[in-house]
Length: 349
Image (tube, rainbow, N blue to C red; front, side, top):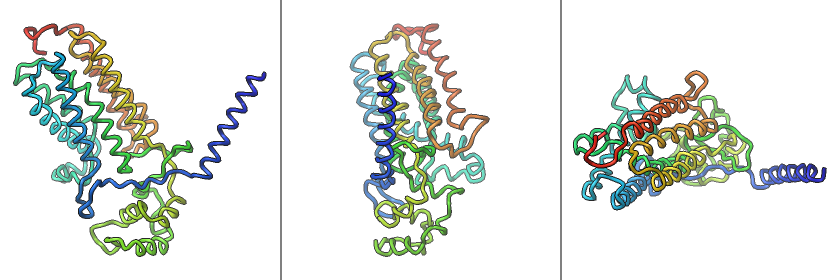
């Protein structure tokens, strides 16, 4: 009985602390800039670009380590070109995947939007597929086992996914569903949603006064910047604008961080354990584990992420496309036992 009352007291205390936390501190209003250094409204060094560079560097040095430890048929002098073209294939695949999977109608009507990288739009499923195609072509050209080099890339790939999700959080994009958890975040990007209250209905006089006080280099008369963008920019540094938005924005899960941990850090740890503790002659196990692990973690993460791209049946688009990755992963793991690779003289598959 005492234990029961103790548990009730703990739950009550936790709930009370949560209420106090939210009333005293409030939810964090996202105010991070997507730019590290900014030269104009749309040009500058972005965190998202740095994420790609970090993924490239991490991939290079980890793959180099695997080569030195005898886990790869690649030679050291092949690494730079291999990783460079691999990164390029990931970017092209990610962009093309976004166009085909999430923006198909607009892409068909105007294929040149593919090159509008500054507008954003990358699909991780497409990036992974682009990398798969590249490794297959590379392995055939250089007579190297496809599954072997795939295992190495898949082991380091979660780091790139982790960096990318962190960049998503910094950009304030791909945010989560509404929630009341103490660590929830309010994202100004929400005002871009069609069903969000129009900025016209906000306290426009307060907004305009705040913008004037800041002497921002842009204003509502600038045809290059939309009204929503002005509000979002001002929310990063203007307390008055922040107070106004706090009244209208919904508290949401920082799902980008959840996905960075699941698809990134946790999956990376799992793959590294298999890399060093698993069978060394079973090429394809790591690739299969990556596909299955990414798919499972992505499906879990989607339950916390706002489904901005709609549903396919009862699944979000991300969950739907991830189910196919599970099947691909099973095929790779099965191949590791049906066609084990023990030395370089065997089949190049």
